[in-house]
Structures are given as C-alpha cells and as structure tokens.
Image 1 (cartoon, rainbow, N blue to C red):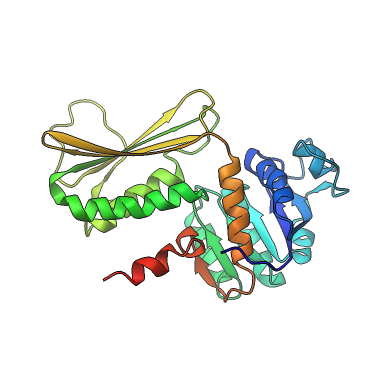
Image 2 (cartoon, rainbow, N blue to C red; image 1 turned 120 degrees about the vertical axis):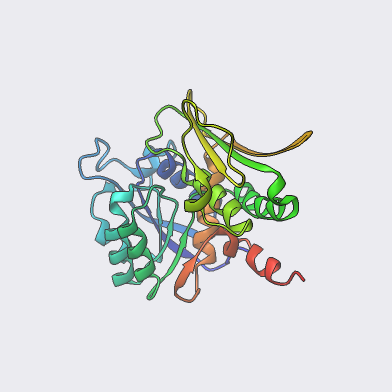
Length: 279
C-alpha cells in the first residue's frame, strides 16, 4: 500500500521520454512534491520549466544540470537517465540521504556496485521495468518454468521502438534470468542471444532471447513455452509509458521510512512476502 507521508521528489533524466512521464504523473499523487528535474547540461531544454516540458502547467522549477543540489533537496530521486550516470548518482544520493528509485537499464558492473554500496546507507529500488503488470509476469514465469519442467523450451521475444539504444531490453534479460534460475541454472549457462546460420538442433535447456526494433512500440514482451503438441504464451504489452511512471512513483512512496537496502518491485508490491508465506 502507498505511504501517506508527503515526500519531496527529484526526477533524474527529466527531459527524456520516461522523465517527462514521471513529471506528468506526479500531479496524480497529492502527497508528492516535485523539487527538482535534472538532465544533461547540454540538453537543449535546460532552464525550461519542467511542468511545461512535461506538457502541463508551469511549476516554477527549471530543468537543471545540478545533480547534487537536486538530490540534497529531495527525499527520493527517481532515475530514468543513463547507465553512465548510475555510479555518480548512487554516491551523491547516499551522501545526502536521498533514497533512490532507478529504472535505468544497461547498468554496468561499476554502476551496479555503486548501487549496492549506496544501499548500505539508503534504500534503493532498482528494476528494469516499473510496471505492475510486468512484475506480476516475473512471478508467473518462475511458476510456469517450475511447473512445466525441462520438457518445454523457453523463448523470450521483445519488441521496442526504433530509437531504443540497448538490446535486448533489461526486462527481457530479467525474464531470462528468472526462467534460468527457476530451472536451477544461470543465464550464463543457458542463455542464447543470437542465432544465425547452421546452428544445429536446439540444446535442451537453452533460453532464447530475441530483440525486435521497429516502429514506435513502447514495449512488448512475450515468453513462449514450447512443448510437444502445445505451447503456452505469456504476453505483456505496454501502450503508454504512464504505466512505468506510476509504478516508479509508487516505489518512491514505498521507500519512505524504509531501512537501507537493495529492493525491487516485488518488495514494493508485497509479492515477495506472499511468496515467502506459501508452503
């Protein structure tokens, strides 16, 4: 359940697609106060009012490049910026006691280590996908893999807009990791990210991941389980980025008063607690 406490929120990557969605969604959360919007110092919208930037009313808050000032003024920062910024953001957030929600994908080992170190002092929610539906799918995939066993092949197909920079999506990688772990393996052991040429029969236990880049698709993910004589498909489609934005703000509210540590959307939604109580 969402916290009722008022929180001060900074949005990092505020001028990007997801940043603007978060800015726009804040108005639907009466207990959230925007205090800063941050983006690259060379972004052409620097100093523009972030409310107008998001297609709404003026807020008297200009887009800034001062990341440290933003996190020092906020209770929680929501990050949809670049993986190149993750380590610095984590260090600044930790220094200033600002909890952190990050949906940035393609985070490097250095960035991930930075988040883990910051989580010793602050509460961090990190997830490649903030939508409620996708996080439900994460749990369903694990259950289906455990139920079907090794006789069913697992393939993951993701489709995003032509301008997406990373492939496969962080969400697809997480789905593949979950499937691998549910089968008692690791993705490094079972993952297959490309197929071309005379590859031979499909190895037992392989998890295939295919990335499609075309059009303006926000995000489609299909997890296909293929057996002899039948197949099962679990599909999640996002038609509006508001689903991610509202999930991120929900995570920010959940962090209020939370103990330092690394969390994900399973914690935010209470799914981990429910799974732990199952026999």
